[in-house]
Amino acid sequence: MYLTDYDKALLNGDYGEAARIGMSILTELGKTTGAEKMISVSMVHDDSAWFSGLAALEFAEHLVELGGKFCVPTSLNSCLMDLEKWQEQRFDPELYVIHKRIEKAHTSLGASASWTCAPYFAGFVPRFGEQVAWAESNATNYVNSVIGARTERYAGLLDLCAGLTGRVPYQGLHCTENRKAEVLLKLEGFKPEDFLDDAIYDMLGYVHGEIVGDRIGAMEGLPLNSKIDGLKRFSATSASSGGVGLFHLIGLTPEAQTREMAFHGEKPQDVVIVTPERLRESEERMSNDTPKEINLVTVGCPHLSHAECDSLIKAFAGRKVHSSMEFWAFTNRCNKQHMEQNGMYEALRRCGVKIYTDGCPMSSPFEQWNFNGIMSNSGKFSTYCFSYSGIKPVYGSLEDCVETAIAGKLHRSARSWH
Image (cartoon, rainbow, N blue to C red; front, side, top):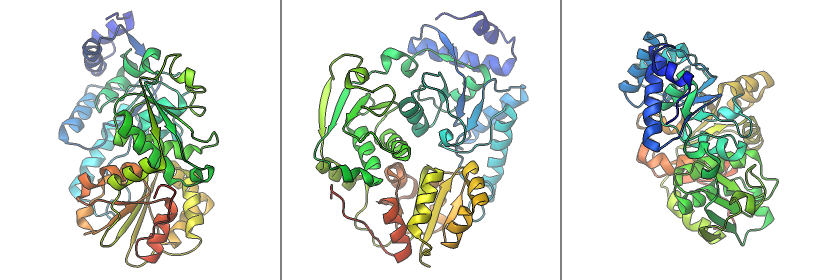
């Protein structure tokens, strides 16, 4: 593998021991994957702050002790809890203490305390074609697909190494030749009004991931005026039901303005027809249609955008959450501050909505609440919820979630694929 003088200086420890450790790990990764060289990245999204054990925390603290500093702008992914409202969420105080150590370590390295899984809605927006090193499945999928920047699906700790060095191996989705579509998914049988329902983007993302697995798919047939929040949800759900790090939506996403462009002038390896019936079958696997009761409605996985919070206010229309229900909404700190300034935060609070930042709804301490049933408008949450909580959730649109919370019992609208 070719190394520049800068790469060699990093490996030699000329930029400090922390950077040397990071570069040694990245060069070994490059050798393992057959990369021909290292490249520079302009931005990192750090998912190592997600607590999965003390080893990752102690590694970050060790890098701080060595004087390590990130050399490129670095955003922090969600952690387990709202660092201000953790007691309201019923988290263990010992876990909070650990999270303050995590916060200190990563911000000492130079990360911005963004604490969001949707950094592209919090000021971290690379340009088309820009090489970055992002972790977190929805974030990498979105930045590759919707923005057209380039990143591999980096695992925790590798993101720290990239932040310390500003370098990564030139392999995988960093390379043009590895970004061409392999599978064509053609939508048939859908009406234009079907795409006015926000739920369809989660369901199409779920089907996309099921079909392509870890290959790159190009879906044809979505309307050209699809909203950015729908594409965000498609990103999150397709990365959950499959190993998707890049998708193309023909006519919509920047590397797929035409079918030929998406497939780099080649023919698809496979062509799959996606019908409303296929969506129904997939939703049956993802959602629990016969819950005994619903105690919790949670939205914001990935974190809600400002537009989605506005839609939430309009859906409530001044009505209140039923006394038997909890309604949790997760967003980023920037959006929360904006809502506090323009009155949206107070409007949602009056409706009985609890707004959280920093954390992820999937990591909530469900066992402390004794919930019997959970509903969400997130395909990603619905895919993972059972493994986190032991409860198979009900999936519904944002409007379904609001009506369920107000009524205190399940409400689901009929859809074309039901």
